[in-house]
Every structure is written in C-alpha cells, then in structure tokens.
Amino acid sequence: MMLPRRRDFVGQKPDPHAVLDGIPAPNLFQSFFQGGFECSTHQLASGRRLDIIASTKHDISAAADYSQLSEHSISTVRDGIRWHLIEGTAGIYHWDSFLPMLQAARETGTQVIWDLLHYGWPCGIDIWKPEFVARFASFAAAAAGIIKEHSDSIPFYAPINEISFMAWGGGQVGYLNPFARARGFELKVQLVRASIAAMHAILDIDPRARFVHCDPIINVVADSARPWEHEAAEGHRRAQFESWDMICGSSWPQLGGQQNLLDIIGVNYYSHNQWILEGDTLAVDDSRYRPLSSLLLETFIRYKKPIFVAETGIEDDARPAWLRYVCAEARKAISIGVPLEGICLYPILEHLGWDDSRLCRNGLLSSLPDAGRREEHVPLAEELKLQKHLFGQYKRH
Image 1 (cartoon, rainbow, N blue to C red):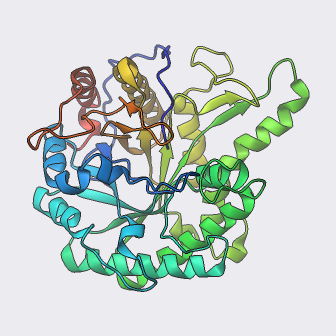
Image 2 (cartoon, one colour; image 1 turned 90 degrees about the horizontal axis):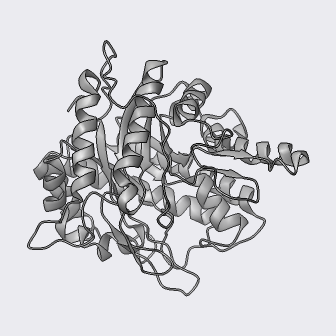
C-alpha cells in the first residue's frame, strides 16, 4: 500500500525496553525483521504504467540490495514478479526480467516472498471476465515451474497483494485500475477466485509451496456527533476480514476456499489504518484508537494461522518512532499469546510516489544506488539495531 504524506506521529508509551523471555522463536522465515520492495505495476488513469522495481533500479541491483540488507540481519524479503513484462502475449512467457532477481536471491541466500500480482496485470486482459482467472492461474503455474527449476528452497508466494484494498480502490471508488465504482465486492470476489485458482495451480507444480495473504488491518469508528453511523462504521471495519474468510471457505464457499489455502496471514499496518467514518485519521492518543497489539490479537484469534506484520512504515523523520511503536506493540502482542513470525519494513527503498512522482522518504535505503550501494537512513538503521536487541531470544537472526 502507498504511504501517506509526512504527518507527525504521536506514539503511545508501552515499555520499549521490555525484552521477551521464554517465548518460542518463530520458525517460519529466515529472519524476523524483513524488507519489502515496493513492486507496484498498475496503470494510472493517465494510462502510464508504474514499475517501481525498475524506477528504483532494484531490477538491476537486486544482488547488491539483498546483500546490503543482510548487513542489517535481514535475510527474508518481499519482492515482485512483474506479470506485465513476462506475458506480453497470452501464454507466451519471457522470464528475462525475473531470472536475474531469482539468481540474486540464490547467490545471497535471501528468502523471498514473491508477489505475483501487485495491482498490475498485462494489457488486454479484462479483469472482470473468467479469462482473467484462467490467465492468472496459468501464469502462477509457469512462475512456480521457473522457481522450482532454479531453487531448492521451499517457495513462498503472495498470490494477490491486498485484495481488500485493491477491491476498494479499483472497484469501489475508482482510484486504482480498473477504475470502477460501486463494484468493490464484485471485484473482491473475482480476486479471491483468481487467488484460489493460482494457489491450486502452484500446488500442482510444487506441493511444498507456502502462501502469504496480505491485507490491511483497520479500525473504523463513527463520529461522536453522528452516533447513528455506528453500524455503518462497524460494517466497514468487518469488511477487512472478507477476503480472508473467502479464501479459507468460511464465507462464500462456492468460490472453493479451504482452510489450508489461508496459510499465512500478512497484516499491513500504517499510521492511517484507523479513521472516523467519512472523517479524519485517528491519532494514537485518541481514546478510540485501538493499539496495534489488540488488532493483532483479534486477527490471530479469528483465524489461528501463522501471522506477521507484512508491511509497516512511515515517511521522513517519524520513521524511527513509528518502528519503535510497532515493535513495542508487537512484543505486547507476543506477550499475550500472538505467535508473531516477523515484521517487514515496507517499503525498504525510498521511491517516487504513485500519483505525483514526489520522492517518498519512507525506507531504510535510498531510492537509487550509487556505485552499487544505497545510502542508508541512519536514524532508522539505529532504531532497527536497537529493536533487534530488544526482541532478544524471540528473533532468529
């Protein structure tokens, strides 16, 4: 998800120095702290297609980027396979944009969670038609075959990134492609159907595959001056679970959802994930704001699946304070029984904004490399080092 412009962050004050004792170490990923490479490839309303991997030169710097992250004990990352570059013609795949990244992961010992669809798809596909589901499943199977051919590691996939956000932005309010309005639930069902088909296609190729399903966790409240909107606000809040419910088959079972397909839950959390219905973002010192630890506990209790923070970050000077808050809340969640598997700093690279091409200063590393190395945001790097220490025995690396 794209981050907002710079805003002041006022943190709550859980004890940031509490070190966890006696908590079982996570065993799902190579590293507890992870880096997420922004990999959006959707077309804007103007017709211009984004390719954040290319604009940050990560496509030609993957090995150096992975190696630089390893200096921060980050050996698990989220990254993207760019479908629009691979399947320009239906059923014909060209992997030259992906193989160097796959090679870089193998050479550096980096574990990658590969996004298969991060808001973008090839031109000429109608996302509303059954053919979209078939094309995506075939692409997913082809990608799984390439990864299996070039790596012995258990593969991790995020089939469709942020189904809920994409359904809202692309189907409800006309912000993202396909720029529809009042069709949000319809698009959500279609994306779930495609995700399920892709997972089955991947499992046919490699039964070892693991699947991560990333979506925002949110809180929506009614304005105190309009208490009659409570049910509407609660409806918006509950909608955050719809795609996960469909994937595991607890709702809309006709789509083919199954418990085993809801494998790993990735929760995305930013400073703007809690708001007043039709109003402003809630600040963390607002009495109606729910601590992140509470949201993590609610999500884990609902599904009882492996869970990790798949995206979190903020812009500018607030970066260290935001990481401090998220980590303190993560330790609190762990202490009350949430077996959190990791925290992914997202995006890990600064980049140009989707809508206005402004430089979003939101990462650990700079948007462009210089002589094979990226400039680091030192305050965030120092905070990350402190947080790795504070997690103590809980983190693996």
